[in-house]
View 1 (tube, rainbow, N blue to C red):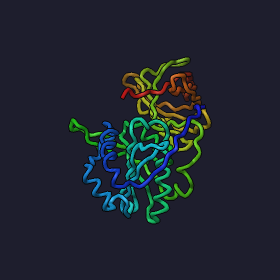
View 2: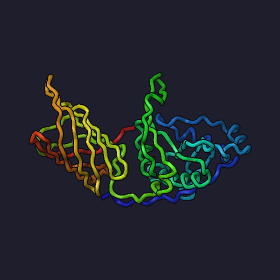
View 3: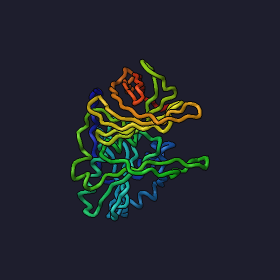
View 4: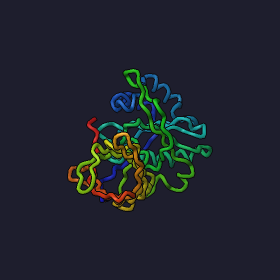
Length: 296
């Protein structure tokens, strides 16, 4: 099981005019290739805060306080409609500690309570921004859309974004504060590390989506096309069924099977999966997959 980690103390407070300077600086400092700066101008933002434009029926701005220190800000817009959109900016030094999920949980508690007509809190994450995808998932938001070519890039092309949402019914059921149990595979990718037994799947790459205990994996390998597996994760064991197209020259064969995968964490912190599988052709095998870590 994953080792327990210290959870930071997280508080939110409404932005005030004196926050304009650090918010503008944080906007620039926290931006990445997958999270563009909003483009705040300090004097203009101060005027908006003085006029109460970021504490209205339509939108709110929040300062994020982590362990007593100002560490970022959160914006919620569209509160006067059925759907409101959440945007988080947390400084680089405060990331990776589980604060983002608690920010989303507190935002949900406040805004669903304060805005009785609000039905959904939504947010987007760049298709390669795995940490933000996992923040949404951990706070009970569910992935429900893929916005193709919605994120403009500097070279004139565009990337896709994943859309997440937490509904009022989710919030009322406490889904945003569900206890964390077992492993969270959502947004993670794994690649083949070792084939212990059976046929090799050179080039195997597996990408996971997860909702509670339900797990979906999409995969490809050198001679395996359009693979998909679905199963239930209980503790550190994932039991699943799979189907893919097996390519052998001009011949393509549909292959169905089942498997049992055990998760564990390596000394370097990465997850690994020991996977035992069998298919309806009578083939079987065992292999080790290891979490792929971005070099960005």
